[in-house]
Image (cartoon, one colour):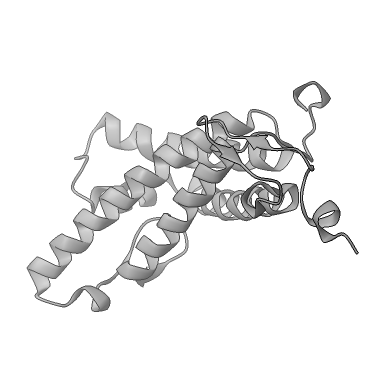
Length: 180
């Protein structure tokens, strides 16, 4: 049985968006795997957005804990806009409309999240004198309190999934037939 025809997209070489080449059978560009990445990211970001959309003041307080923005219009604009951006990106990942743009936005957001959580973790470690593996706080993502190492790992995975979607040479399972 020829598994390559079932598991992988095409028998031809796939050229990546960054100019490199992937041989036939590259599992990274399997259309079903890319669909799984899309649906996983969509589920996470839609759920997180729904948790925050109805509570902008509470979300503003959680953002303020990072000591990046102080009370004022930028903080409240961020608390209102960020959940809607996450929701739109999640819907885009499901439908396939503006897929690369959503992947780029999520890549940027996850970069900011990684940096912010890293700095907050370092601050908690310094202030409370506890080791890295014991830092525990509500990151503001909508999923409740968690260990900092777990949040950094999750955000790193979401970063990599977003990057894979951004550089994928093509997509299947999208609503816009003109983009195929």
